[in-house]
Image (cartoon, rainbow, N blue to C red):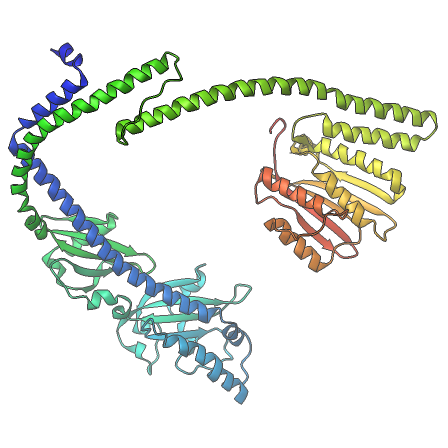
Length: 594
């Protein structure tokens, strides 16, 4: 029987499967559908509750952002900064500045129309400034407060705390002496060197920061609550009617975004900056009302299923007829006939398969032609490569002949220059690798300097400091020569001599710094700043190309970023009239790496 079923056509298998489905007990179908519907509606209820909770959280987050923005506007205000930093002038002018400028900045923030802030205070470290205007206090009032000590000693620039009365600071004539808790946002006002100039405090009551929780009417759908340190700050209704506090805190500690009992679902979230946990409770009773009408629909579905079986048989028969036609055409293509195509009659699934198959056959034909073309081109390239291998040897032999002739004529200096040029040419043409070792690159620089000495003589000198442990590390070929050439072009202007020093220094296990230093005329501060920004950001001025070395340095800079990464770029250091140093920081690449 198993073999008979395996040998059945797909049409008969699908038909038999549908016939068997008709006889599945109605009770099982109804139970399964009821269960799935319940899950669906429960999921929808959870999603709606999450959206509502997100609305509540977004409102609180927006207010937190506004408070942070207000604090930044005050803390980073240059007028406030200067006022807190300098010694206070106890004269009419000093008090006028205090009242008209500094007080106005804080007072404007207090009446910010998007948020009902209770109070803004600045606790000043500058003991010369008198307290006043209800906003400005000496930080001596905070020295004995634990929260202040912890905040000052921490590296945090800002923090949220919940304080009340004397826990915050004590002043008999101020409203904060009342025993009412409130959230306070603290921000350090820092000097450029990190010294604390003062502490900015923005105070806000619960009903002003958690407004939707306080002013949204409780309903059967949503009942909200707010927890702080596992105690309720606010609840729209008695949460004990739904969940105990222990149940709520246990779930929050497990960091689950929701949990449920038989009658209710609790959706919760946190605001880490405030240390607040909050949530909404939703009743499951609404789901039962929605499912009550489902039972009638289940009966109708079962009747409709019987009718669909018959319709399905005739539909699937037509479908498999089209599939059989496609299979026959594909079989011919597998046998090697790539000229065949499947007729596309309709834009259904079969039509899409036929269209994709026709496109695939077309691509196969194109790929066959492309492979043939590439093989032909590769053979031609190999022949050309064999021919081009002759050219470098021709150059070397010609230079050797010229050098030998100069020796015979007694022009030893010219002969040595030709020999050095031959070494430079061999260095650039002898290998297809992009990289060479530090030692090879250093020898290349020495050959280049020897060639330049034909023109400049003893005016030019070179010193290379290359530790033995770095000699075999690899660098992009032709990296240092343009830098040295740039030093010669610019450094020898109005100079009788030029000393060039190249230092290789291992910065750490992963990077090496190469510094090319000359004692030339140097670069002005303005031009040095402009060039360093250009090299770091790869944004260059549209300068005309000329023999000024700028194009060479630009090329080296872009090669460094291309091969090593954007964080590796040229850095210039110069003192006009004394020296110029070009520094390259590159990763350590061992011998044999590409």
